[in-house]
Image 1: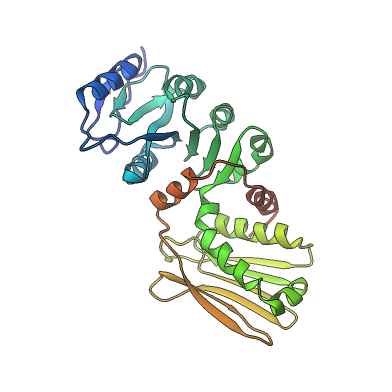
Image 2: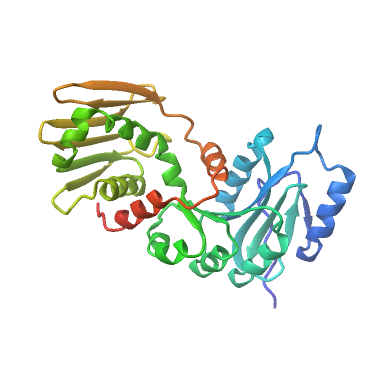
Amino acid sequence: MTARQPKVPEGLLPEGRDVPFAEIEVTLARIVRDGGRQRGPARALTATVIVVGKPARLVAAADALEQLGESGGVRAILISEGEHTAPIARVTETAIAISGLAPRYLNNAVAALRLSSLPAVVWWRGGSIEALDDLANLADRLVLDTPEPDIVWTRADTLFERTALTDLRWTGLTRWRAALAHLFDLSHVRAAVRSIDRLTIDAPDVPSARLYAGWLHSRLRWTSAVQIEIRPVTGEGEHPLAGVRLQGDGLDISLDVRPGRTCLEASAGGPEPTSRIVPLGDGTIGSLIREELGVRTRDLAFEQALVAAREIST
């Protein structure tokens, strides 16, 4: 007996048409010819975004890509893994959802369905490592986004050689990195930065804290003499970190989420104490992936931070 064909989850591309795998391109052409459901001028496509993950994570990703709206359209290829070589697909004018595809066929499916004239961004939300290695060869940019990233992070050195690699956690830390970098512009902070001997991070998302600590470790060229403590916290909403503190000889730097959870306060003590408040921005996956789709080149600061983060335990 052959395995039963998996159904595309109801919440995934609910306005799409279910078709056999072999009829995907024919159906896409028919939808475009018939005008699909577009209202007003059709959006110009800017990239192919291949999303791999469990069905529930694909639904959230599809919603995020749909929210890109007028900022630029993408062809989305959403795939969950299984054991089928040609499963049923659900198709809209700009998206294709495939459920239960055997990992060994994922690379071929993407090669056939991507738009070769556009950059290909792989948004990795979980799946088999073997499939990830194959997809990296097709990706202009590979965006990691898994609940427990260590198994992928350990393979980063190989992935660096194949594509421009990043992690959506790194994107979520942008405001935190910028706020701290502005403090380092202060003369008294720069003068005392080599004395920093302790870093403490309170974090709802521990991998994000490790990545942030890895960034500091690589940028400031810390040795093992610097003590790093990461303290997990709960109930902090969508922000990856809750607070950061760096201490050294006559220097005390802190970053904390303000009440209301929309702003970040960055403070530096010492002979010239200073404090500034900056907006944290939108930390939803829609906002984060929009930011990532605007990047095309390798990020060496991220690569160095990730290498350092792998060595940081909690």
